[in-house]
Length: 285
Ligand code: DO4
Ligand code: MG
Image (cartoon, rainbow, N blue to C red; front, side):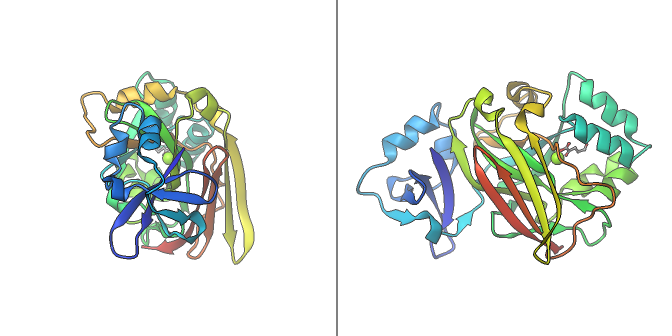
């Protein structure tokens, strides 16, 4: 079962259940106008199935403008959860190398705030690179969708856009390297239901094009994430409540070579095999 948000022609968003490859059942007339109405359910798949009926409006998926699949959910991010991320970050900065090395093997994971829901960029919209940064990269990541009790109820594709020169200069600049306009993209929808062991079989692939030509591609497997989803979610929910549910990015395992930086008008395509494709062009913000 897949859940999406889509533009309804006005400035409101509707919530839909994607019931086959082409058909979206509009759940808004059934009173579902906020994602938390589904994300607070113990079993969102059963809840959505109980809502879908023949009298609700149906739309062709291909004719809809999809919005980011979050509204009142914050987005948080785990970091240095793949060996590749640890190695790349230790190379990026002598100054912070020990911190990355330690956090990779520490009991407590690195978790940082990434975005409020309303600032998240949807597939088809533009992600941003900072005008004051010289070395910018996308970070293709599996995003866990957690209900208000911290259980994983779904997954989406995430891009944790990052300014590596700002992060590398001083680890205390991490919030500036990570949080700015259009720095977080999620989509195209949420896949409800798969277990962690199913998700760990998925592949994450990224392709970056410039002027129609590929300038970088890479892939990793979700199985390479060092920590369990429950462990990451457990730390996020320590001493903190998310009454509308929350999204947690699980870290990147694909890092372009040091010679690579994004440029305006590049197109970033991230595909996760069990979910779908998130595609964004790049603009300077
Ligand atoms: O420690 C800095 C950020 C790490 C991160 O975003 C990642 O590993 O994906
Ligand atoms: Mg990241």
